[in-house]
Amino acid sequence: MQITKEKETTVTPAAEGSQSRLQQIKAALQERYRKMQAERTANQQRDRRLNAVLTWLFPVFIVCLAELNQFVQISEFLEFCINRTSVLIFDFLMAYLMYCFLLLLTNRVWVAAWLQGLTYMLLSVVELFKFNTNGNHLKLVDISLAPNIKNLSSFAYIQINLPLVIYVLLLIVVLGVMFWQNPAFTAHGRRRVLPAMGCLAMYAGIVCVPGISETVYGFFDVDTTASENAFSINEKYDNNSLLAFIVETTSEKIGAALQEPEGYDQQMVEAVLKGGKEGSGSVKPNVIVVMSEAFADFRALEGLKLDTDAYDAFDAVAQQGTQLTVAVPTFASYTVRTEFELLFGLPVRSLMDTITPQAKLDVDTPSSFVSYYKDMGYDTAYVHPFTRTFYNRDTIYSTFGFDTMIFDDNMTVPAETFGNGYITDAAVFSQVAQLISQSDAPMFIHTTTMQNHQPYDWKENNSELTLYLEGIRETGKALQQLTAALNACGEPTVLVFVGDHFPSMRGEDNLYDAIGIDSANCSVLYNQSAFIWSNYELNTACLPDEVFSVFYLNSLVLEMTGAPVDDFHAAVLAQLQEDPIYTSVFMEENDRNAVLDLLTYDRVAGEDYSGTRSQSGK
Image 1 (cartoon, rainbow, N blue to C red):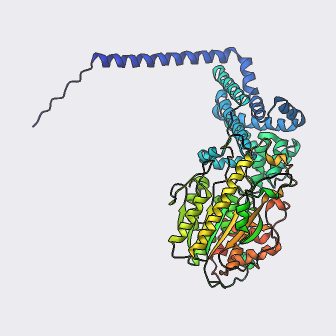
Image 2: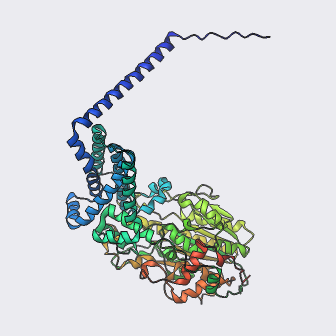
Image 3: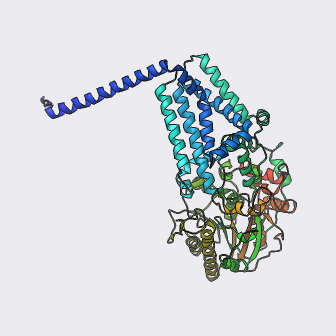
């Protein structure tokens, strides 16, 4: 047996002194905390009138502070209070319902105040930055983009001004006083649970139940005008201001949720499909779709003087092909709306104009142009020179069937950047040319560029428009280089080029306001110059002479190239004769195309009956 003698532990005087000091610090902190709690308890019992005022006027304070932060001058806020008093009272009502719920839930006045105060101020600050960045107001659905806050901050014009600092400091002071005074509130059992659930139910009923919403909004004169475009949304904001606007637009979005068509089944879908046709083309060309970020032709806007040659190179390339004008479903932001229409050949209008249509996909492998070209023997690629996680593209788009997906972190060509820090169109087009040169099969490539995204502020003493047009000039040059490379490669190739939306401009005094664009005449901003270029002869007879919605574009390319057209695409193209434009800004609210709505629901949220049929052209 082996006996091991344990070593004696020796505590040095230095270690004993260190432990003693830690114990002293701990004891001191505990004593300080005890005294603080004793003082808070004394404040609670001594200053009951003050505490009652703090408790029950806090919702009024935070509503006024959050709203005041939206106005340049205090006089403008006071004018709103006078002219839209009923809306302000509505804000107070909703604030009290939420405040009472939090109060009953936590049983602590200062905790309820902190939760509501910080939430309201955060919304107020985010709205301020968002509008100053792109002229669009904050909606609750924008919270879905919160995981991409790092990417979004790269777009934003964040300017900390003196009023904002004062309002934030004022809130901190008031919240600090609420904590120190520690107003009393005591309720137990049913006295807390039932009233709390009642407050929450009333709040939810006003927001979520259409019948209740309409009645309450009507009583308080909250503006519920249907908002088909960004400018009518902004006008609604002017009438409602921040808090009522967020609540009402949330109700609007809930009321417009995607619904399953009545009687939806496979037979119903098959009844609207049209007979497809076999391919008539003798070649399978490469098909490249370039969706150019924020590319727009400002020459279409009246009242704007453009003494520039920025579009010369673009015009030179477009004139070599067929020039078009297409209607896009978005303005200034939400690129994925146009991207969805191009990739799926379906209208965002049929998805109730959701800001993130790709997130509505409820099938594992959705039918899209990607899967269609793969079935024809194509290699497929997606190129987007930005963060892969933005809009969850890496996760969602991987289900589309792309063989290759390239983002900013895995480009295989030199990724030069433009003045605003985004990868240039020239680099993206070089990546596209490389993909084609390395593939033995014909390719379908969709690329969403980034070069011309805001901000437009990388040079001092230059207007936003001047810097924007510098990017447009470079895009034209890059297109000339791309078409030259495609001609040199010797493979039949079709290039489809379209911008996703007109660019965002700063909220205050932007150029759209300067030339008088409003909800009545803003449709011009939803029309985009586009072209179809090829290095061999195409049959362009199928192209409409008038403006048409961009979601028809890739279906038309199938016809132009002589590719097989299946029953689904034949059905979509048949609607081109009925509704060449099916984009909300151009239409009345209740003007619906039942066939397009049905096919969109089927492929996005339904059983994909239209995608699982045999393709008659194959």
